[in-house]
Length: 248
Ligand SMILES: Nc1ncnc2c1ncn2[C@@H]1O[C@H](COP(=O)(O)OP(=O)(O)OP(=O)(O)O)[C@@H](O)[C@H]1O
Ligand SMILES: [Mg+2]
Image (tube, rainbow, N blue to C red; front, side):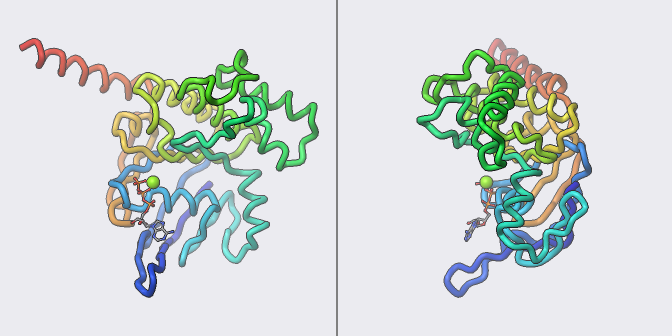
C-alpha cells in the first residue's frame, strides 16, 4: 500500500542543510497496522507527512497504492490525499465553533457530496465511533476522548485506504487512549491500513509491527502484539507490580 524507497528529507536552515530523514526504506502492506516510535526530533512526523502527501521527499521514491507520487502537481496530490488518506492528530484539530456533525461533514464538502447525503454519511461515521448521541455537541462540550473520536469519524467518513495518526492518544488519559486503540483495532479489522506514531510502548503494542526511528534512520523493526487486549495485559501487569512494590 505504501512503499518508500531510499527516501531522504533535508531541510535548509539558512545555508545549512539539516538532514531529517536518511535513506528510509519501508513497506506497509495493504491492511497492515504499523506503529512508528522514536525520540523527539527523530523524524516521525516528517515521515508521516511524506506518507500523507502533506510534504514531499528531497529524494527517493514513494509509491502509494501502486502509483508513484513523483513529479505530481500539488492539486493532484491533494486529490489523492482527499480520496485515499485520513488523518488523526494529537490535538484533534476540530473546528471549535462547529458541531460534531459539521466537523465530520467537512471532508465530504471538499469531496463534493451534496447536503442530505453528507449529513447521512457523517452521522453514520459518528455512530461508528460511538457518538450517535452527540451529533449536535460542539468540541468544548465533549471530553478529550470524545473529541478524538469525532476526529476519527472525520478521518474515516471518506472511507480512506490509509489512516495516519500522529500521537492519537498523546493528549488522553490511559483509559480513553485505549478506547481509541479499540476503535483503531476495529478499523483495522475492517481492512483499513493504519500507520500510527506513538511515544508510548503499550500503545505501540496494539499494532502488528513497530518501526523505530533514530536520527532520521530506521534502527529497528519488531513485531507488536497486534491486539489491544494483549497490549493492555502488559499494562495491568505493570500496575500490579507497582502495587506489590508499594505494599512491600
Ligand atoms: N520545516 C522544517 N524546517 C527545518 N527543520 C525542520 C522542519 N520540520 C522539522 N524539522 C526538523 O526535523 C527534525 C524532525 O522533526 P519531526 O517533527 O519529524 O520529529 P518527531 O520525531 O515527530 O518529533 P516529536 O516526537 O517531538 O513530534 C527536527 O529536528 C526538526 O527540527
Ligand atoms: Mg512529531
